[in-house]
Amino acid sequence: MGRSRPALHTEVLSEGGFEVDRTDRGLRAHCTGALIAMPAKNQKGKTKKVCFAASSGGHLEQLLALRPLMERYDSFIVTEKTGYDEALPVRAYLVRQVNREERGFLLKMVSVVARSLRIALRERPDVVVCTGVLATIPVCLACKALGAKLVYIESFAKIDSPTVS
Image 1 (cartoon, helix red, strand yellow):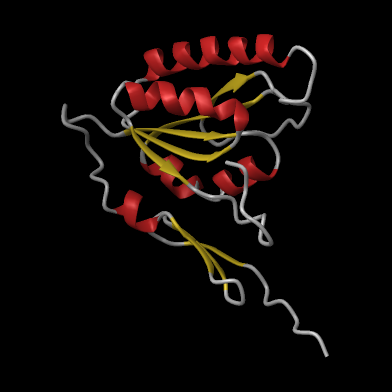
Image 2: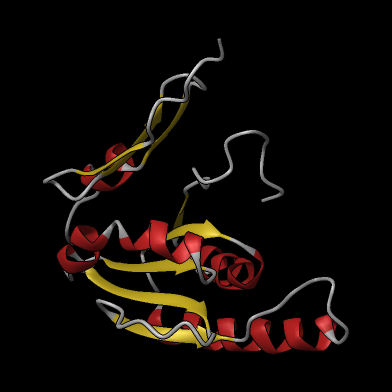
């Protein structure tokens, strides 16, 4: 008789945190400590600016579970431009979708890097919360180079092996 898998438990806490548990695997992703402890104001006395970055699909869905945080801070989203058209809760910047196995990958990635630099310089976030992957790496690196704190949330969708990210 095989063991049944316990259900994946996802909860958005009232303080705007994020918690995921998978009991039989010991998988646990917490974002609560890093962001709840974050003061609402930056050093200049302005509301903290937070960049939420994720590729399209499941990574974006996971990030959207943090909607209470998006509403609590001056926030924006960076994601891939796809046919998946959803109304995002805050202003959004779209970058080209890239696939490292496609022909022309390097040219597309150069385009994403240029767009990411423009976004980082324009917005200058205090914090970047990212669930990955490829197309969001340049914006994370650009914002980090400008002094932003980086919070990476490992995807809880991949439970049997580690992700490449």
